Length: 129
Image (cartoon, rainbow, N blue to C red; front, top):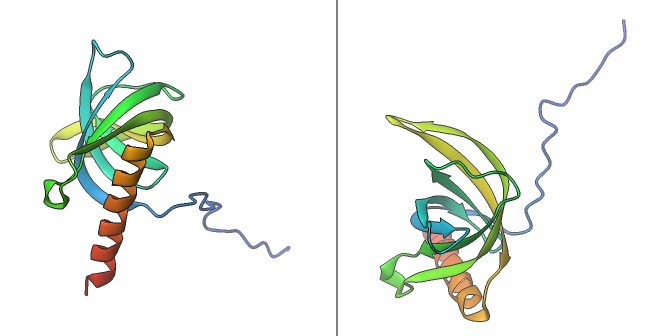
């Protein structure tokens, strides 16, 4: 009998930037005539995870607007994103989809807002007991 070692998980972290858990409203669209909404569950400098009741195909390119906490005087950020993966999501009485999106483009102003927001989240995380 041959002894075999099996890894419990072959998952390798590929993210270059830390993600922070949030609950932020998001609007997204392919064309400005049809704007749909969802909820951002986590965010980083280059990506986000969001929930929506609307089905979006993988590789779809979207415009996204994420509404940030008003407590730090940042209203929103906007950019272009691409859906990288999707899955079904259920939570209590709610059923929809969970998406991973890569942020492909953002103006320098929105990049600065996002960076400042992430720094604030990191400071809050580091100061938590």
